[in-house]
Image (cartoon, rainbow, N blue to C red; front, side, top):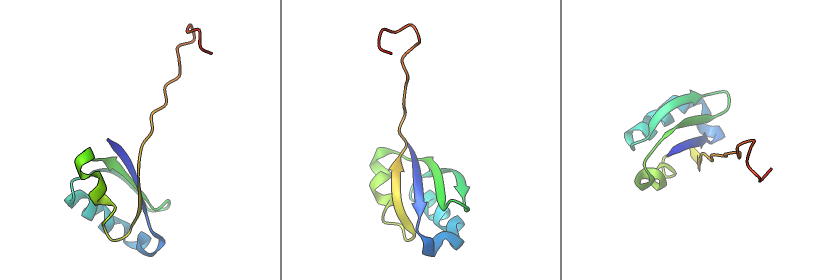
Length: 76
């Protein structure tokens, strides 16, 4: 599953270290966004809860997927 990890303000200067720790816990890191204090990537559901225990992680949010109905569908 795709996730976005928010890094707390105290650890933003060392965001790359936090990303490394996430990788060691099983997350496949796609992007590190220092200006936003966020790290994106993917992880299995079994490993998701463990990411929040890493020092510097403020939040771990699962990406949501939205699908619009086709233009020809009755629901519009």
